[in-house]
Length: 366
Image (cartoon, rainbow, N blue to C red; front, side, top):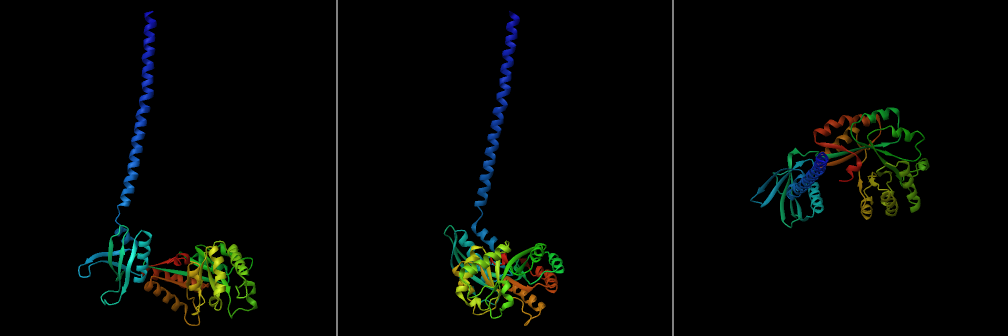
């Protein structure tokens, strides 16, 4: 009997120990998990708090890449020195966009022309998100370039593709655009196009011009006598043939750009297809800009290379200098082995002056 009691006592003790071994680790583990969760939540909260405490003015400076800041007692303004490579007007527009996007607003901004000791300058009065007033004097450095001081786009107008051109284009190590007419280009055109790397494609569409004749019919130009539906069909089918196309550039079009109804009929389907528009006509009477504003589209007018008034070297040099002077420029060149060779050689000059080479879609955002 005593032996039975002894055995029962042993079983009871073992059961108690087993229960303790089961529950205690689980409780401790749960406690540890709770503590870890609390620590992670605190870390996230601390990180968010750290982000939120970044002063608005510092974010503002970072956005427009201020090189140096000081305070002028005489002018009673904070003086921000900005990198060369962008115009003061560009900086003012960039500042305005930042303020509007972050809950601030511009009270007044004015470009200054009365200080011969400063390269370019302007005053900017603004309200920050807390309602405090910022009184700034922005001035562009005369000799210190900002990071990525300027941008340059390079586009080639494609009339044919050869194996030699494919090899030359694939030898470029920077982004570029190919302007292609999607209609009447032959069966091998698109497979050859697919073999080219680093490209962005633009629809190079013929539009009404006194230079059009029966030879251009297969290229499906947009004409003044076309209906809105016919124009929409041309643009929709062009985008179907080149689905990665990001925009439209004019080919000929000297008469089309003066005809507002034709432009309206072109811009609506272009906008529906998320395409921007480049006017290459060089027509001073162009109504592209005013019509484009009605559709809230991105549109620009650019000057393509014209062999009748300059050499390739002159044109490329002028566009490179324009980028350094105004902060942005684009060159539109005929696709040839010569033009590819010259822009390839130009890359080091662009890098030396702080100019980044970007595709046209990036260029169109500025």
